[in-house]
Length: 389
Image (spheres, rainbow, N blue to C red):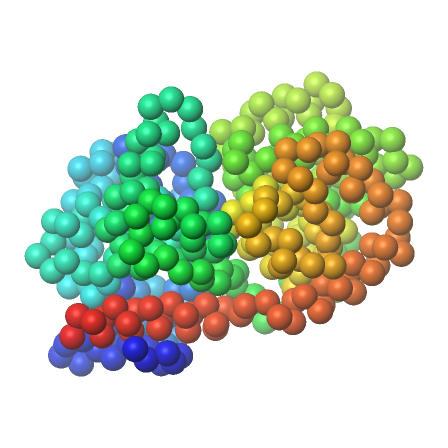
């Protein structure tokens, strides 16, 4: 097995290796929700790096993914999936897999789709699955999702997981080879809001001129705990300068959360998807982490690189506590009182907040880079394609 940053050698005929990346559900039967902005940005970071190393990449994803990561910004070929049914989605992906050397699926729905489509091809190409956390559900659907998890885990040659907890989960579902793998976002060559006037303009547009700005980004569902954030904001109303919490993203809980915010006049705004989400993060005083999973890890990394301290909840085993270290203050998941108190204490103590900002640079210096992630994934591809030769 060759562990290098070089792309895998062509498996035949001197042509570059062709990898099809599958993101999100692409039919009602596999999930109607579009991929999150964080998932799209993370995939763009990976595929840009793979293309730079000579890999031919096709991205098969719902059309909504293009708005978060426009085709023009990718070196990969973007193939929007317009399937209306699960069979249509499977057949469309089967067509994309013709001539591919490997398929890399991101998330459970994508893995289920990829395993079905791959099984219908003449050449059973290796399947790599990026394992993501998911929202628990009640009733028969939970059993169905666990069945899909077992199918995806057993069909994959390698399962790549963002946290040790997810490695354990994939192994329990039957993965033959589950590995910890770094997850990163694209890092701009220059800070998008490095100038004070740019930062002030962004804060003014969102309504946080003379008050602290708190920021979070993710899917508004029960798994990510934004109900806890909204409830915690009750503790901030008594501060001399109550902060404004901005939670960018969409999801099934958005309407209910908005009703609660309006009914209680809470200092939280839900602006939906924002193309300038990372600009907002860099203009913030504090980043609020979602409750666990890859989203928390990605957001924490970006906060550390931007020099913005983090607060929020973290489950044991997710890795966020180890990642953040002295650059944040984390509380138990689901505890709105603890989160509200933590944020209030930080905002009352500018000296402590300054110490956390200083710690961000130290933590950011040891973060995995996008190139390290690409190198890791290339080594996996090299291993799998080498076994086929």
